[in-house]
Picture 1 (tube, one colour):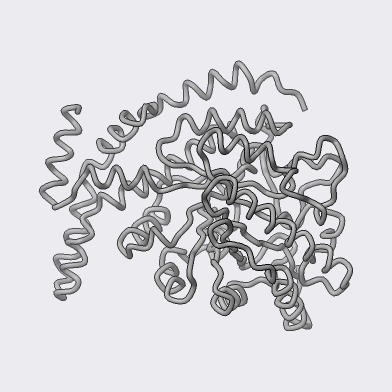
Picture 2 (cartoon, rainbow, N blue to C red):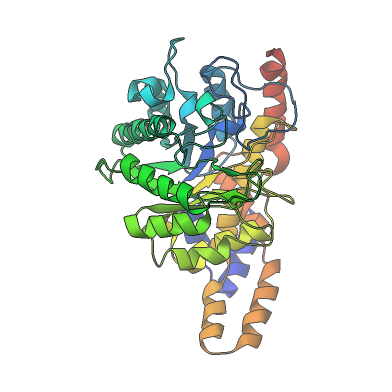
Length: 417
C-alpha cells in the first residue's frame, strides 16, 4: 500500500467512507463496450452499403479495423488497459458469414459463434443490437413503422432473429444478453400524421417480442430518441412512446445520454423510470450541441449519472453501456478514455460520502448538505483511482497511452483501406 493511498484512506475514513468496499464495488460493475467504435459502424456484411439513417462518423484517423479478427485484437489491447469487469456489445451487421450473403432476416446464432467463443475465452459477457439502418430496406428512413407491410415484416423478422441470437449468447456465456432495439424511423419535416406510424410500430414490436425467451438468457430493451439527422421534426420511437411500451410490457428501457435535449440529464430520469420498469439500460455518450456521440469524459453529466445510481442503490437494476464513435482520434484510445472515465465516475460516486448528504437532507439541514457536497469535492479521489489501477495491473495515469502508441506503430499503421 503506497503512502499517498494510506493518506487517502485516512481522509475518506474521516468522512465515514470505506475505501476498500468502494474499490471492490467499482471493479465489479460491468461496463459494456461497443464494437462500433473500432470500425466506424461499418460492420462486416460487405457490399457498397454506406452508413446512413441519421448516423455519421467524423474523422479519418488511420487504422480502422477491417475484419472481425482485427476488431477483436484491437479490443483485447484496449481492454487490457481498463480496470474492472467488461462486456462487449455487438450489432447484427457484425455477423461472420464466411463470405456468404445472408440478409438480416436470416441471421442465426451460428453467424456469431466466433464472437461467443472469443467472449467465453476472455470471460466477457456479450450484449446485442438489431441493426435497423444502413440497409436498402431502410433507405427511406422507416423500418418497423414502415407503411409497406412487406418491408415492415422484413424488419420484424430481423428483430425476431436477433432476439434468438441474443438468447443464444446469454445461454452460452451464462449471463443475460441485453438485446436493445433502436430504429431510425422519423420525418425530416413536419408530419401530417403522427399517430399511424406509432400504431404500426406498436404492432410490429408486439409481434417481434411475442416469443417467450428465458430471462436468464436475454434482457429486452427499447431505446428512444428526440431527433436525428433526417428526422429532425418527428421520431416515431419517442421517449414517451417507449416509456409507455416498456411499462406496459415489463421490459427494459434504454436511456441514451445523447438522445434528449442538450440541457436534459439522464441522471434525473433514473429514479422516476425505475419506479415503473423492471430494468434500465444506459447508453453513456457525450453530446456536444447535438447527439454527436463524443468520447465520454469525466464531466458533470457523467458524475451525476454515476452518483444517481449509487445514491439510489439501483446498480443491480441497471446495465451500463457506452455509445460513442469518434474517428478523429486513435480508436483504441477512444475506447480506453471513455471506459476508464465511466469506471472513474462509478468509483468517485462510491467514494462520495453520500450517506452524510442524505442524512442532512432528511433532517432538513440543507446548509450542511450543501457544505458537505462542496467540501467533499477535494477528497483525494485520484489517489484511490491510481491504487485501483495498480492492484488491477493496469497502467496508472497516462502511461497506458504508450502501449496504444506502440500498437499503433506495430499494427494500425500497416492497415490500408
